Image (cartoon, rainbow, N blue to C red):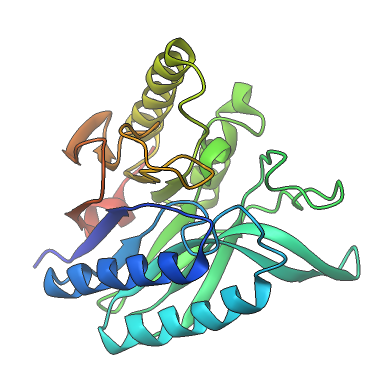
Length: 268
């Protein structure tokens, strides 16, 4: 009997308003519960937004707990994009991080991936990520699916001439890639078009060489204004082809069932 994992994606607005983002994510969780999604993926910074994060940190903490409890009550696992603060052992203080945080259907925290290739929006006082690659063991029907998150530029940066972080993750045993993104858009139409083509090439290339990529983008601009075209296509890409995708405007949901055994037995 084939075991499948149902990944869902929520292409939703990411705004500077944490409470508004929380309500949006809860609606996405409702959709995921209705469609029996095992793990719901949200865009980069989908809970916190980018603006005023430190100022709104207490609200982010409160709303994260609310989201965790709500998803658990609906029996939906999460791959949740948000800015956060973690204690850095090397720096001996808490530092802002851009993360994907992972939770089981019961609400148990599994772990997180930090964004490694940072933009000025991500960097706090010149302190960058520790560039630590770590796989995330997602429980699926008594099995463990080795996964990892590539946040925005992580997909195509970090020693990209050697295949980038995705290749390094593959060498570690990772077989499914979560790509939460939230790129700048709406500045110049020609630049946007070039970026869109370039990003799709990286997504398709990664999925053709290394494994399924679940992509979810913000459907607003980075500063929270309504916009009518995402920078990245949201959907699931396997072996270089989109097996499911959604329109690149507005709130959109999707899901796709991936056979777990095929991934665990797959050889490069």
